[in-house]
Structure formats: structure tokens, C-alpha cells
Length: 113
Image 1: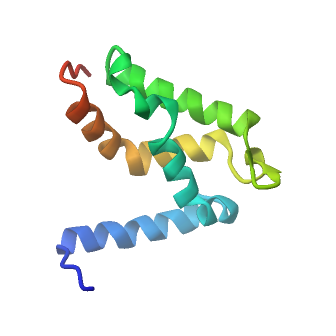
Image 2: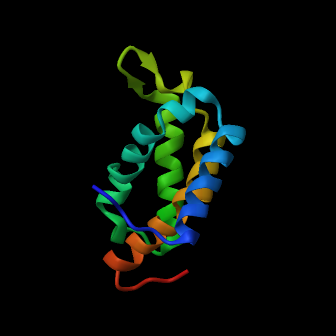
């Protein structure tokens, strides 16, 4: 299957890959998809409109990340063996914030920055 993407999209993908290699640990990079799935499927994203505004929504996501680093296990090891709160929050702020904002706006009519 072939996909057509714009030059801007291509450059964004390339830049993201280069940034990931220099900015994040190898353990985190190997599990980025698992981490993104967690962000999109946690309690906060299941009930986005329970939050007063987008800022509160993002604070909820950051709280979920902090708790997962402190208390969750994947397979046979604690999440903290491969994920730090700093790396996770940096990744969300750099690579997921716009998609999360779009998600919040789409689902919650009373969008307020």
C-alpha cells in the first residue's frame, strides 16, 4: 500500500526520528508505541469533558503518567525501569500535545484554554 504525504509531513517525520534518537533513552524509544497507547487509553482520555478546561485535562494526563511511572508494571518489570516522568512528559509536550488538543476540542464543546 502506498501513501501520499506532503513534503512538510515527510520533513516532520524525519525530524521526529532524529529528535527521538538524541533526546530519549533507547529503552523508552523501543516502547514509544506502548507509551502512546497508554496515553490514549487511560482514564483521562476516556472522560476528557470531566475536566474544566484543556489545561486541567493535560494535568490529568501528567498525573496518570506520574502514577504509571511510580506504580505500574509491564510484563515482568516496573514501568520505572524504562520510563521516567521527565521523558514521558517531554514526549507528550513535544509530540502529542496538538493531537491531544484536537481530541479535547472535538469531544468537549466548551473548550477553554
